[in-house]
Amino acid sequence: MFKDPSVPVFSIARFLYTQNPFYLIGTMLVLFGLQQSLGREPQLATNGLLTALLTGYTFFLAGIAAVVIRWGQIWDDARTILLVIVLMFFMLSASLDVHLVTEPVSGTLLLALSLALSIALSEGLLRGLRIHLAPRYRLPYYLLLTLLFVYPAVPAWLAQFGLVEARPWVLFAFPWLAGAALLSLLPAARAPAKTEPASGTPWKWPYFPWSLFVYLSIGIAIRSWWLTISFEPASGQDAYFRPYFLLPICLAWSALVLEIGRTRASRGALVAGMLLPLAGLAMAFPGPGASPVEVAFLGNLSAMLGSPAQLAVGSMLAFYAWTWLRGVRAAEGFLILVGLMASLIGRDTLDWNSLSSPQALPLAAVAAGLTAVAAIDRSTWRALAAGILICGGLRYAPLPITGADAWFWQWHAPAVALLALTTLLNDDLAKWLRQIAWRAAPAMGLIAALIYPWALPQLSVGSLSLFLALLLATSAALWLKQREPPQLAAVVMTLAANGLAHFPMLYRLIGKSALAAGLPWLAVGLTVVLVALGISLAKMGIWHSARKCLMRLNMALGGSVDKAT
Image (cartoon, rainbow, N blue to C red):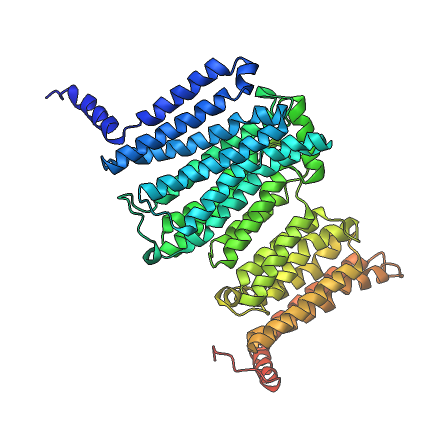
């Protein structure tokens, strides 16, 4: 059967009728028409006609909203109109940039007048239409409006005081101040659902009032871009605005969404709040610059504050640290990952191809944090992660030793530290690793004593002796943790390995005597005889006797009886 072709058309028509996006579409066409009419003639743009027309059109939309709500109760259409009025506030602010550049005094007065009109119109609509915007939302709304209309005067007046060099920093600071203003919504985000006041509208939370601030954030992002065009000589493609300017707004919304998720027990909001900063990180690699103006700004930014990637990573570390302190457990993993990312980012990191070699300082900072948390929570996995990072940092950090000894300790110090770590903690992972550690210590000692003197002839005697001594101390600590005969046997074997390590030295001394010519045969012969002695002792039951002796020794030292017996 064939579907009625009129069904899709009817669905689209019904959607357009219900949502009525034509207020927004019509406003966009009006703005484009004003730009075509007045934007091409500088005299028309500066004579105040554009500002007057935008103001008149804004009040015209406010009148439509009043009619639609008070007499028609068409709340869906009214929501679109009110949000378009907020858009017009941004256009009104942007239309005054040319006045600020040419006549800062009159431009500043016009900004103040426009701010007063915007606040008065907003307040009139809220009161006249009986829309209740709680103080926790109203104050941040007026704060953002104030920033929108007051801040553009700052870069305009810099030229009057001979501070043109500071203008790029002022423009760069605008989205940071906007992000701080958005954070004034934190009390609203933390408010429980039961304390949410009625809005006097059929709009449900969070569509009202949070959609208002979404529109404001979009407008601030556009305004951040337009400020760099209005107040810098370069414009169009040569403007140095890039998406990384908007990082603070992204982080501010991350904090707000996260707090909403915590308060409302929304897993989706929590996940979105944790992942949203990653979008800011993706914006922090603008490349080396597409124009001389952008190259110069990136150079100054990297020299004064750091590369965009450094600023992003630093801000994300602060955000996830705050999130972790707020009790979000997943933030610890993000902190570790971003900290590792920080070790690959330097002042010259402008894209993914300019990542630096791992830096020891960020790795050490992450390792120190993990160590502190591991000590507080008695957590083995955190201690292991810290140890891995420390070892990784040592691979790139200058060491006081060189040559074979440096290579030896880079690989063997982590192994000894891992064995020792199992003696300090007592969670399930530590207990499992301890069962491996007490067996591994004597095995490593015997390998080091019998093989390393021949396989690593350049290794100093001091390094080998210190390594075996550390293994012996670790093996003894493992026995003290459990005090059982198998662990004591491991101590004895590790002690024997320390003794065996001196035989190569004895072999070399004998090699300088009169026995040097036949020394290899003598050594092999004695080794075979010792093997034969071991076989004879086994036939005599020496191993059973040795086990009993070991158990008595373990008891005498305050240990326990072997569970196997």
